[in-house]
Image (cartoon, rainbow, N blue to C red; front, top):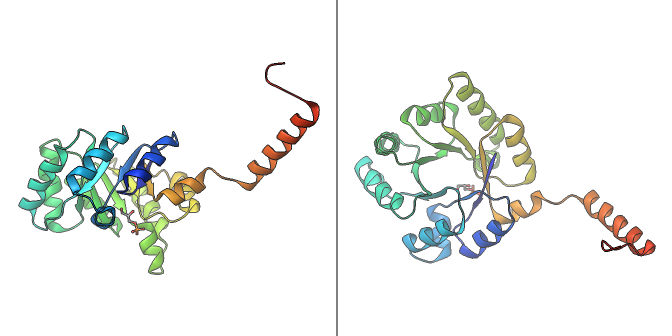
Length: 218
Ligand code: G3P
């Protein structure tokens, strides 16, 4: 399962890349606005920090505009994936970009049928928004599970990217159901590694080694 950081903050992306197990980055207009730098500059710098995909979202809302912006974004770096909203115009843009061999991430997906259409349009990734569904009283991860099952049934190659991830239990369920990727903020990624029993076990090993005077040299 690919693990991405959901951020447009270059320092955060640097810290995530240093963890050693983060594959790529997703951004969105809100995150880029918060970062306070030009979009092209931010995407170019971020794309140089990670080897894997970096999603950059179009701002146009018509097919022609999305395709034009998508081509420009894709030209910034070879690992840029063009993020397209799950609208009628967006899916037509996904088809045009797929024909031009440009990778896409269809965002703002809130239903299984929407995801199926994204796959049929030729999307590389589709991003169901788990946390926002949970916030609205639904079970966001159930949508991810359903999409994974439907894609398996119809042998679709589009990758399911669980987005709007809020805590490690979301990541666990994404892995259990076979989601291809998750994207989460740095604070969530940093929590994935930790377990209190690891800390307790490590403290015990350190204490026992110190008491016995153990060293790796002798
Ligand atoms: O980048 C898309 C998605 O991950 C946004 O998450 O937390 O704003 O719902 P959130």
